[in-house]
Length: 263
Ligand code: BG6
Image (cartoon, rainbow, N blue to C red; front, top):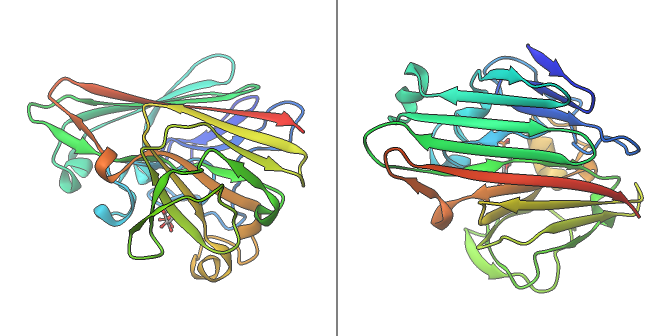
């Protein structure tokens, strides 16, 4: 598969999928499964899959077609790449809308992501998005999270019941939550790697927190049974009530900035 390598980032044209961000002075920040399947038309386990124009099982394929579509890329100098995807016969088969999506990635000391979608057709549409970021941690059971307290979330493991977060979450079992109306910075303090990762975002009102834990890890073919402690997904998203509606000609932008500091 076509991979693009820059100083601190690597990505595939398949899915405009960022698979590596290795800022100077730190361990790599994105988790990649050793069992990830790197084949055109297949989703890649790890890095930053792009879920668009729907999230999860809201359509077929699961998490939308963007992560398994061939994107084109414009390579900038110095750790920058700009991907684009426009509607084509294959996308219109599953989603009958005219659109232009772009995904800009800038590496370096901080990782900057910018996703935008434009309605290039003559009827309105609504889309969901998740920048399904797999963060690498030493042991997810020992990390400390901030940024979620008092926020309502949809518990995808409990019939999509809405629950209010009491205090900050810990990962003590499978976690699959969509925090709604969530715009706060998230920090992951990881004593094992002596670092703190901060996720800052704009144009996003949902955040998904996901770790498969033991049983679900075993059910995933492209994920090692023992890999779940090494990752945590903090996904910058717009889902459900926060799906984005675009009139003809309108566009919407979501940005993410990820920083990493020694602690
Ligand atoms: C998360 C979902 O975003 O992605 C989970 O909330 C899902 O329910 C996970 O299991 C992984 O999805 P996939 O399709 O990449 O296996």
